[in-house]
Amino acid sequence: MTIEPFPLYAHTGPPAELWPSLRARYPSGIAPVMLDPYTRAWLLLSWETNKQVFRDPLEVYSVDPRWWREGTDGTVPETSGLKAIYRPRDNARHHDGARHRHYRQALENALGAVDQRRLIAEVDEAADLLVARFAARGWADLIEDYAAQLSAMALTRLLGLDDETGARACTAMRQLWDGGGGGDALAGWYDLYAVLAESAKHQRDVPGDGVIAGLIDAGHTDEEVADQASLVVSVTHDPGAHLIGNTLRALLTDRTLRGEVLGARTRTADALDLTLVRDTPMRTLIGRWPRVDHRIGDYTVHQGDMVVFGLESANQDLIDKSGITHPQGAPAYIACDTHALGAGTRAHLAWGVGAHQCPHSSRDIATTIAEHAIDRLLAQLPDMALAVDSTALVRRMSLTINGLERLPVQFQPTTITKGQTWQSPARPSSSTPAPATPTSHRTSSPMARLLKWIFPEG
Image 1 (cartoon, one colour):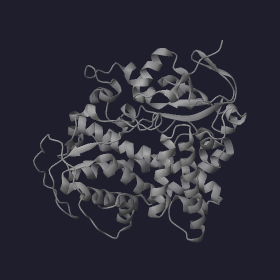
Image 2 (image 1 turned 180 degrees about the vertical axis):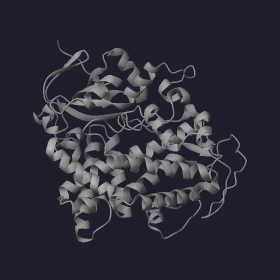
Image 3 (image 1 turned 90 degrees about the horizontal axis):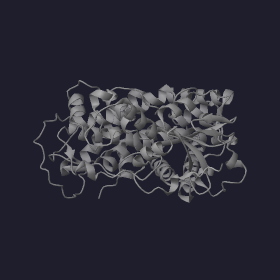
Image 4 (image 1 turned 45 degrees about the horizontal axis):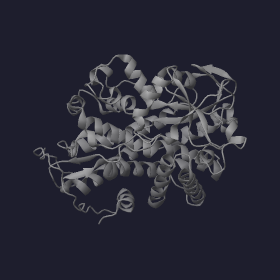
């Protein structure tokens, strides 16, 4: 019997609203889909099927795209962005066995060598600089004006890039994430690879002190450095920005959660874990190719098929099956009761499971950056409130990244200077603020130079 796959790439509505309908249509937790006009795949929809494939032994699945049948037999053309992204690469994600362990160890060592105290200090400095830019005008977009800029800074610091190169890497990565399987994603990948390869070559002559320098010290070639560093970019910039943004959205719309965090009854780190369950920044992740034919749910998955983790759908499924109550008409995965789900829960698959799960050092760095970004903002602008109704918030139209296009807030205008003791002002009016020119905040620090490059003053 011929299986007619669902054209995932043709869906034009909010992605989060697609998963419940697919779970109803494919109740065994796995759906045949088309990622682009050429690429067939199996999308894992339920909590159980996602965890099963994450945990299945390497005798059943490979992470090596050389097992991708349609990627090597000519079915998927060379112009496909997916073909460009998922060609064999020399990094920890695209190898099994001894080579995986070799690349993973090098990456863990490079990440482990990052001075986290220095990184935290620079995150705090960057947060203060960004808040100072918009504090006097009384409004901000916490995605463009804050989370995305802070994430770009963190990526630049982690890799040991110069300011301009860090901004170029972030731009290329967003183009790759949002370009689907077409030419935009293809161009984004080649731009990103060129930036990282150039940086590796440069740091051989002018040694740096970030992950790229650590990979060079591990004996990697420039190509291996670029392949490995691309993993750091992929998990640090957009997912990191929207981990911050989605958690801030929750704090602005969930009074219980915000009160617990501000009252120190719930740690910000626990609020981040809650976000990773009910509003994860990664919707889907291409990740496995079967070595042998086997059964998942109602279907036989064949050797060489592409398998895609449905992380957002899995979390929705987990919450729906938990019986958690939520406001009538509100999606359970967004508005589920904080106490029922439990702030601090780690019942999510954001870091993966099994041999190819994210290194603990990368998890620690990602959550540390997000935690300090949120704490710094809340400490300086505790009265901020949404500038629009929560129903007016628009999500990115991406099947990979789950985040907001904008997160507009308003607060009592104030001037923030270094070392200032914050005095909580009166709550602002409910009217939407008029745009204004950001305040100037000049400094010669490396963080300020990066922020000025990607967020120039008018």
